[in-house]
Image (cartoon, rainbow, N blue to C red):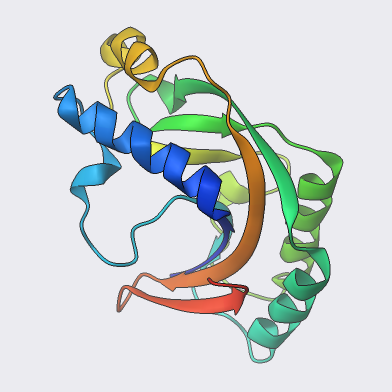
Length: 172
């Protein structure tokens, strides 16, 4: 599987990692416990089985023209009641247009993950995986009430087969 992801600007990344740390310190599930070097806050725009020939170059051109994209985080929720704990990203026209453009570039790819499709996508930054809805109130208290802002200033692709990252723009 190959993903297309936006990466947080340094200040926004620090804010998200701080919440990861506070969740872990409170004994809650947290992505702070994932020490793989590719683990960092990101927004997934799409995931497919493989990139068709030429797609990386087209994505790089797209991101070079579109980034940075301003971002504001919203509330902390559990997706589907017993899945990831996430910080919702407020969809802006620029972000929504970029997401649609990525899907256009990937139109010929096989194995699109339907939860990233433009009509189903819930933009978010993951805070923890396999989170129980029963712990949401505590998680929100630990996260605090702030809604950080920043930019998505880089893009990358994650290869789930070998757990590697390919920069598509910026720091990736």
